[in-house]
Image 1: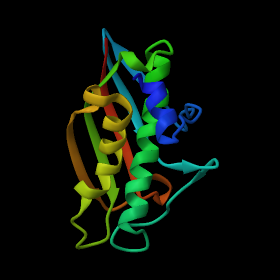
Image 2 (image 1 turned 120 degrees about the vertical axis):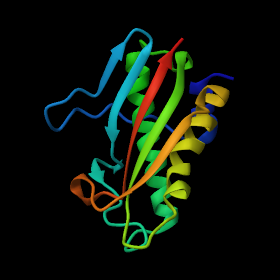
Image 3 (image 1 turned 135 degrees about the horizontal axis):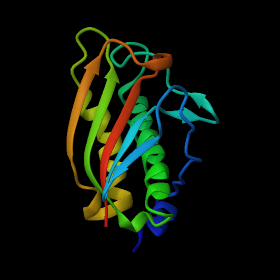
Image 4 (image 1 turned 180 degrees about the vertical axis):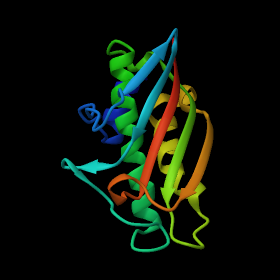
Length: 152
C-alpha cells in the first residue's frame, strides 16, 4: 500500500504547504537529500495549541500537534519529490517542545510526529530523532518539528 492510500486509510490528509513567514525557504535540496524547515501546528489556519507542555497544554494535545507538524513536513516533502510521496524516506526528525520548568516528557510529545511518519510511510518512515525541550517557540506554539529526508 502506498503512502497516499495509507493517509486515506488513517483518515488523514496533507495540508497545503505553508509559505515561509520570514527570510527562509520551506525546504532545501542537495542531491537526494531534503531539509524541511521547522513546521508549527496549524488547525484551520490558526496556530494550535498555544502554550507549554507541563503547563496549559496537555500531553495528548502536544502529541497531536507533533502529528500535525509531521503532516506539514510531508506536504513539503511531496512537493520536493515531484508529487510522489512514495519516494520519501525520513532520515531524522528534530522536535522542539515548548516546555514548562520541570517538564521532561518531550520524547512522548515528539512520538506524535514519529508515529505519523511510520504510519504513513511504513519502514521508510523510521528515522533517527532528537526531542528537545525549549523555553519558547514562535507564536508560543507548543511544538515545532523539522526533518531531514531522502528521495529515492
